[in-house]
Image (tube, rainbow, N blue to C red):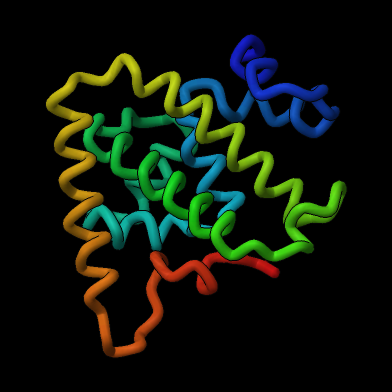
Length: 157
């Protein structure tokens, strides 16, 4: 875990050192989605599972199915891509709350991508297919309803 943390660069704060114990057994993607303010209920809705299952995954008390892990990694990557496309100047200011959250989410994504290298090709393919299907459905929505896939819905400005 400590080696993974250093892979993200920078120095570890006291809060991060304390927080490491809660990440043992948990997947970094959940930390990134937390930074994106995606709730357990929203994750559960995306995956059509009970929020209690997501809570156990977040806490590292249950193993995340590999295809779901691949899917959630793609959701986090998509969220970060959307933020970067926004080109909001305030995101880049050093020390701003949003800039710090974005960096934490990027770090979590890098760590999760490294861990995902051990997933089977079938799990990665299934996660990618689920992501593509749900992303296409999101793009085709025309009713104006908001969901956890809407950038402004999950973003705290």
